[in-house]
Image (cartoon, rainbow, N blue to C red):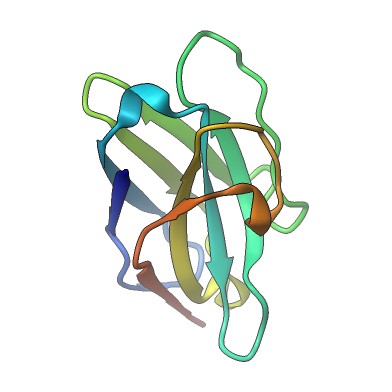
Length: 125
């Protein structure tokens, strides 16, 4: 089993920056990829960005709504995945979830077996 705990969410002003962290524990050696998703009130959970859990592959991709503003990284020594968010907008307000999977690399919610509880990010105008 794998456990994920997100942190770093808070209330910020528009155009500010914020970094979210996702501490991963358990059977991390079996992981293939991790990712960030978000869910705004009354909306479905949506993809933000994935990242391979290990190796040097630089491939990642971002939802169009965050491209150029958000960056996903990881620190395997700390078993932590980060989401650096710059130039935040009120539309970025959501609960942000970290997810992980032992197979596949996708932007689909169904592609991830392990989920954290989420951390709230609120961006005021």
